[in-house]
Image (tube, rainbow, N blue to C red; front, side, top):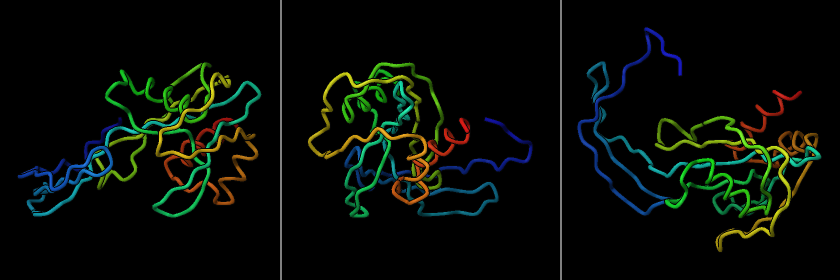
Length: 187
């Protein structure tokens, strides 16, 4: 990451306490911090989550493997990338991404490369989401989603991905951003 001579300095953490811990989905930490200016923020809240992974998976015929699922927070069904959290058993972020793709879609194999890292909200969340590009994947097994997931697999063309994004059928910003970057880089 680039650094500049006039970059803002980090805040000093004076106190840190977990107010609520229900991993992996809700862990809230309250901190008291001092800014480089000397100003104090006595109560600053941070949400701690495990790292997230998602996958831009392309089949040999250049279809993008998407899933559709219901999301209770917005009470709607939308398209998404295959995605999830890293588990304790995962030896690496890439292994977690491969596992999520296989579990959610039944697709696997292919050539894998790291694509990008994003933050859902760097002001309030501590984790990062890591996107992988998987090229030439193929259906290798039936999907085996977790008991809390009800997914439908949709391999779609790049043109359909553009329409899905343009029509607001993909709401998850951390999925739209890597797909938009991918589409721009391959136009």
